Image (cartoon, rainbow, N blue to C red; front, side, top):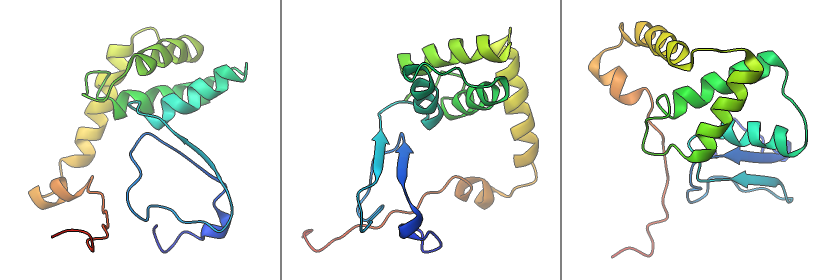
Length: 138
């Protein structure tokens, strides 16, 4: 776990990535919700609905944009039917009529942010660090 995170303050983890060795270690039980879906925001949206809660318009819009980003506008290899369903529901709540237009505007804005990066900066920009216990490898 990142050393800047105080494990005593962690009350839960909601994610769509696989846990890696030593990802998180806590002294007390915590809430864990990890699903093989395209976005953590899909899990959050689904949780709102299973608790019979409607996310506020602004939250629905934020979750919608996050799902579109994570799943590459529902075209990425990790996209699931749950992602597609939550995008439809969230678009309705947020009042988004044209999901394709929203996604293209979002990717265009993100591309502007990336335009100033070097090749190394682009490659390292979404880099994730993992540590492995290699004692068992030969």
